Length: 199
Image (tube, rainbow, N blue to C red):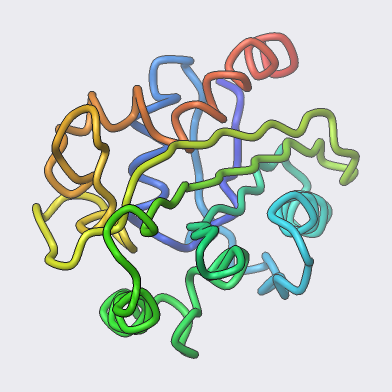
């Protein structure tokens, strides 16, 4: 069975990717299983730059195929913030509560119709030599609300309202979320490539 290493130590992100790609018959590892993998510094100025860097540096270190992914929330009314800084918007990597507090404080002066936002996910697939074979991007549009709704997902999900469904990413079932989400849309494009390259 082919092995694909997911370039993340985020357990919830790994779970989402497993749910989306799990039927391909791949063994999906994450970096918790590869202590030799470096802490990749996400200093790119775009999601693609960070995804490529994660995929390349990690693949060379673990000598396996690697899926490097960078994702985040973009709010046009905030000049594109949090953007590539989504996971560390308030200063500490992965502090969801602090990131959400900062986001709501920044949006506080704005009316509801100015709170439109979209999630972006860019994923890069690199072979064991670090060569990138594919880069894909998915987006999902919504609006940031004031009060959290639902306990699903992570990050900004309880505040990210899908207008057509009248539910946040925190409320939607995982099946519906994966069909709509930035990550689901990006990985959908990657499925035939994975089938071809890792069969």
